[in-house]
Each structure stands twice: as C-alpha cells, then as structure tokens.
Image (tube, rainbow over all chains, first blue to last red; front, side):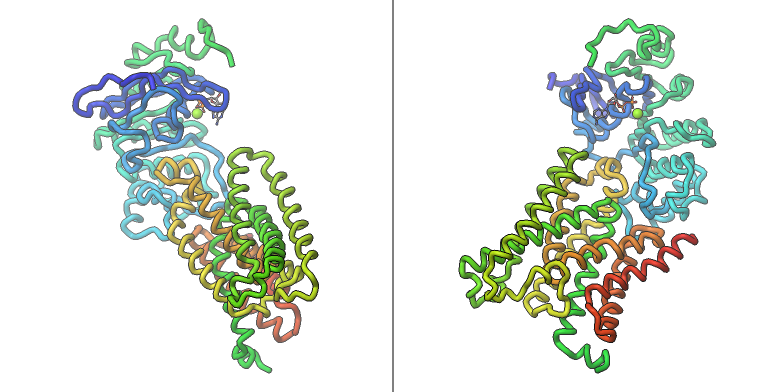
Length: 253
Length: 284
Ligand SMILES: Nc1ncnc2c1ncn2[C@@H]1O[C@H](COP(=O)(O)OP(=O)(O)O)[C@@H](O)[C@H]1O
Ligand SMILES: [Mg+2]
C-alpha cells in the first residue's frame, strides 16, 4: 500500500484507482496508475495492444489484485458489489460445446449464476434487454451458432439487464463485423442519460473516445495521459503512448 | 424365471438400486466432468481408489480388523476413501500450479496407484476372505452388492446429488466462463475443489461396487450422449441421468435374460444409446 487516497466528499467518485501496480508472472503490466471516474461520467481507456487495458478492467472488477496501490469502486473494495456492475468482456474464444441459449447467458446477468430454468419474470427482462440491443430474435438460438457480432450483443444485453450503476466494457466493438459501432455508443449514451450510470470503456477507436467519453485515459503500462478528450488525444500524447516516436526509457522486461 | 420373479430376488433388487444410485449421481457429476474436460480426473481417481483399496485390504488383514464384528469396519473403503480424497487434492493443486505438466504427473501417479493396489492385494494370504477381489475391483460385480455396500452407496448418492444440485448454478456458471462467474462473486476455485472432492468420494465408492471400468463408463458415456442432443445444460443434466438410469435397467434386464456379464451389458447398452443421440444431434 502506498498511503491513503485523497477523498472527495459524498460519494461523487464511482471508481478510484490510486497508484496501482500490477504484476502478472514476472511482468509488470501496470505501474503507478492513478485516475478517478466521477459518478455518472464515462471514461475511455485507449492504448496499444498489451498496454494493460484489459488488466485494468479486471482490477476494477476485482478479478486481479494489485501488487501496490488502492482501488475503490462505490467506495468499497472491487468485487464487493457485483450486482451493481455490468461487465462486457473482450471478445474471446468461448467453449462452443457448452449447450446454452442466448437467453440463458443474458439471464446470468440477473441471477449471477447459471439458470437451470429461466423463470418467466427473468425471461421478460432478458428479452427486453435483448430487444434494446436489437437482438430479440437471438433469444432461443444456441450460443454456439451465433456470429461474433451476435454474441457481442448477447454479452451487452447480459451487462445491461441488471441495470448496472457502473458499466465496464472491454473493446465492445472489436471483431464485430456488421454491428455498427455507433449502435453501441448510442446505446451506452442512452443508457447513461437514462440511469445516471458511470462507464469505463476500453476502445481502439480514438474517434469514439473523442466524441463519446467525458474523460480519456491513455495507457501504456503507465498512465500516459488523463483528462478531457481534447486535452489528452493530442498527437504528441498519442505518439508517446503508442510508441511511434518513443521517448520513454522505462525498464525493459 | 421371468424378470418379474427376478426383481423379487434380494440380490437383484440390490443390484438395481445400486445401479440406479450410481447412474443418478454420476449422471449429474458427469456433465461437469465432460464440459470441463476432466475425463482424466475420473480415470485417475478410479485408479487411485483401486490403489487405496489394495492398501486398505492389506491394512485390514494385517491389523486384524478383518476379524471385527462390525461389518463396515472391515471394509477397505475406509482407507480407500481418504486415499482418493488426497489424490483429488493433489490433482487440484497440480492443476493450479502447472497446467502443462499435470496430465503427465497424474498419469505417472495413477500407474503407481494401480501397481500399489496389485502389490498389496498380492500380499494378502489367499485363505483370507475379503469378499472383494482384484477382478471385482476392475470389472465389478454389481450382482454381488452386499447390504452394507448398498447402504453406503445410497447415502453417498444422496449427499453427492444434494451438494451438486445446491452448487449447480454456480458450478455451471464457472464452467461456462470462469472469469464472468468470478466477476459475479462466484468462488470458482473453491467450487472446483468441491467438485473434485465429490468426484473422489463418488468414484471411490462406486468403483468398489461396480468396478473401475463400469464406473468410468457411467461417468462419461451418459453425459457425452446427452451433450449431443441437449440445447441447455439443464437438459443435458436431465438427459444424462435418464440415459444412465435407462441403461442400468435395460442392461441388468438383458444380462439376466441372456445370461451374460451385467457390467459389460450396461456399458454396451450405454454405448448403443449413444447412437440415436449422435443421429439426432447431427440432424439438428
Ligand atoms: N496471466 C498473465 N500472466 C502474464 N502476463 C500476462 C497475463 N495476462 C496478461 N499478461 C500480459 O500483460 C500485458 C497486458 O495485457 P492486457 O491487459 O490484456 O493488455 P491489453 O488489453 O491492453 O491489450 C500483455 O503483455 C500480456 O501479455
Ligand atoms: Mg485487452
């Protein structure tokens, strides 16, 4: 621990990350990262592959424990309130031999366990969530038969169905061919306006970060920039973070 | 004698009840074994149980427990069970440490278990009646189930099914995606340990009754067949139990009529039930 984080008054901060260092194996994935997400705000996290973006999301979820530093979500330890957080994971290979329907996946968002039988109340909520992402017709389809884009919609519905106060999205538009990325950002903004939720969104899309986020964190193991989009997404900051004109001289692993 | 008359015979009733209990508990357990690709765990634990039974039999004979008037005390299961549980804990620890080399390590450990079992059984004087032979442990003698064995199996089945059904939703969630489940507060590692321990007990107890070959079949074939037709994990679980139950009843009935070995008939019945499942599954 590196000392206590300075506190704001009255729960105005949804996520506080303070001097967080994460080591996975021998590799220091994050080093001394600090930032706040005010309640109701949206943060875009940008950075090159391997920058530690997904790791940061997992730290906020409580899946990865920092070696140093402190993290607070709703003023408590990460993972303390899973029902208040909606998580859309980075599109990954998933076990296509697992017999499941999209409706069941969405229902895990309500029940926080795998449903043996989806009850009628859950079914209505899950269908409504699928409808919101334009995927109601997927409900009874086997998950194994969904395309990448369809699967991503199911994961989005799963995250939103519980009406989360914090939404964590890890590259929600990557690998998604026909799903118009704009749909996702519109959906997010609509949900935020409606619910007052906070959003942390990892994205490759700098345009999306510029126009759809209140704040931007440029990450490459360390926080290379944090602030308003127009401040942080300047050419020099990005060159620095993405290493095209690399000025950094951090320790090499 | 007709099948109805056979059903009135106590030994046949015990065989049916024991087979059904094993079918139900391994049907539910088998779904997780198949979906988590843990078939090696089933084989490994069955072999560990065999080694444990050999050691147990030797201890019981050499310590004179064999002369005890309490039937349960002279059963080598009481040494085989902790042996299997330790084996399950060792596998869990190995898996956590090194994903790569665990298969090899387990393979070595279980070859050693079988060798230990054979060695210790061979040390027992031939005139001692254990009511249990190496052949029984390998290939089982479901028609020779004794009253005490049946009691143990029914109790274990009830406990195993209770544990599996109360943790089912969380186990299934973690089986689908460990990360999503943990993000939702599911203690996936602890649950995996529970699963391994249940498997250790179920397999050790079942293997003493039906043999390790039939046990391995019960654990994998019904769940694998169910997987081919089921659209949801709940359906797969129900179907897996159903295939296990049906193959037990049909297998025992057929073995009675045809006067062929019951364990082998049950396995072959399970295999035959796989065919329509595969045809149905392929057509979907
Ligand atoms: N379990 C792990 N053990 C060791 N290194 C890891 C592990 N997970 C991720 N890494 C490494 O950490 C770095 C950051 O990974 P990640 O957070 O996924 O990056 P990003 O999402 O920004 O592409 C990568 O170099 C990756 O190889
Ligand atoms: Mg990533």
